[in-house]
Image (tube, rainbow, N blue to C red):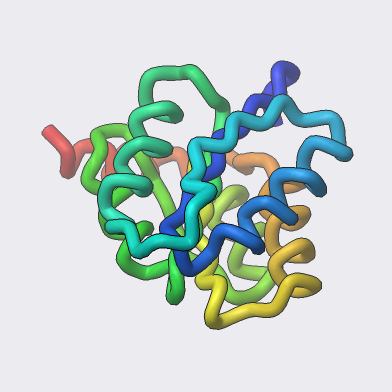
Length: 149
């Protein structure tokens, strides 16, 4: 992980409580947390929240990002439309570690209706504690990045 340890979080209405819990947990680990919200339980559209967090990461305002919605799928799809973003949805800690180590993911997506709070904390810790291995994986990440051209 980078020395600055800056992270952005965003969600739709379905994941507000879990997002806020994750933000507190991550801040307690020494990260500078930017929480883009929302805070109101009124229905909101996950694509705009996925895009906002992804643009934050792509611009270099945060090193990594975490997005959440009911399943984690839709908000992940929206985030991945932003150039330079590699976001994966994870429902287990192993996958969260692997998307960092092998895919150099710069964003993580979690489904608030899929995983409970305890598992979500484990997933976040696995993602944040992992580092890109490079080597043969760098070639593959370069191939993924080339698809954006």
